[in-house]
Image 1: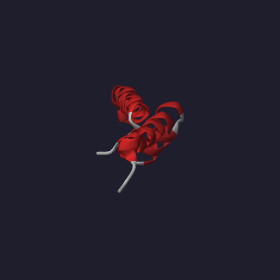
Image 2: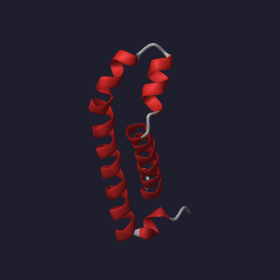
Image 3: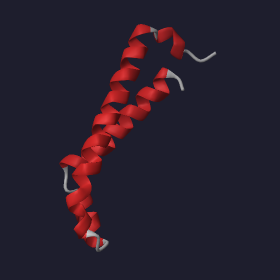
Image 4: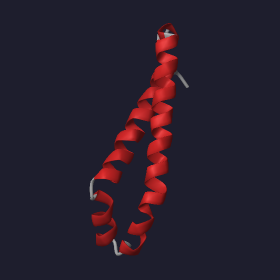
Length: 74
């Protein structure tokens, strides 16, 4: 996987996890689906996912800054 693909994956994952963590999107969706009992467990999944995607983003950013020529497609 190239640095730019890894960076895009990290950024997209971070944004999605951030939106789900910091806005009431998922509690409304779970409530509408009748799964409101699971709302208490969302932090157990979303916060580690946010940390993992932030780590991927920072790792890819560091790789991209150290060798930007590796991302040029031939």
